[in-house]
Structure formats: C-alpha cells, structure tokens
Length: 148
Image 1: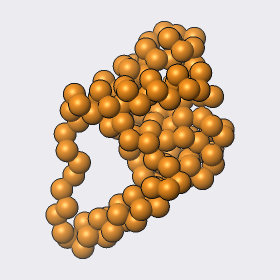
Image 2: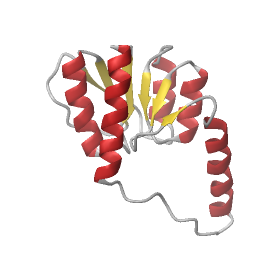
Image 3: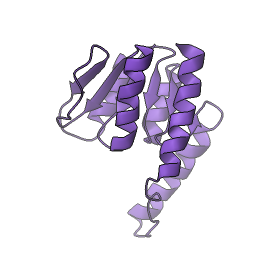
Image 4: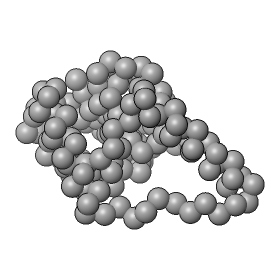
C-alpha cells in the first residue's frame, strides 16, 4: 500500500501530518504536483513533478496507483477515478469518499460548475480549520492502524 497526495492544493498542515505518518508507519508517501515542493529527507517520502497544466497531477496519480492504495485529495473527479481503480480516497478535511457517495458528490460538483459557468456566484469551501486537521488526523490514524 502506498499513499498518493494530490499535492498542488493540499494544505501544508496535512502534508506535515502525512510526512510524520509515513515515517512512523514506514509506508511510501508520494506527493504529486506541477511545481516543486519542499519535502523532508526520508526513505518513505517521494516527490513527483508533473508538467504544468490542468489535471496533470491527477492523471499521473491515476496512472500509477494500485488497488488498495490511499489517495489524499479534495478533487472530486480524481477521487471518482481513483475509486474506480480500487483505491481508497481521503479528503484533507477527514472525509472518506467511497463508491457509495462519490457519484452524488460528482453530480453536485458538476451542477455547481455549470452554475459558475453561467455566471452564478456559488462561493467556495470554508477555510481550512484546526477541526479539519484533527478530523483528517483521526481518520488517517484509523486507516493506517487497520492497513499497515
């Protein structure tokens, strides 16, 4: 099992939690982004630079992941593709996406995207909070305890 991170938009506190978890659990963590990121020197933490452009990191994660890998992303289309390939997907706010809930999330995302393209202001997600970080840490710890 590996952990893949859609790192372009992943909050820094989540990346820091993941760095520590990779070391503690001795699991490979790969951050994928289209710009250079600072990562700690570790046998378990890797960085993969992809070409600039929309969805390049997403496509590379889907191409490389294996069944039962864990993907960290808030990107709903990426989550759907990863689930279709048999991966587990955890949002940086601590919510697991599943085959049961991802289609609904994708429908809502697509509907909101259509509204925005039509000029409707839909707002964005709430600011990332300490509670979000704690929810993520709890879910990650439970997951790694079961799978590592």
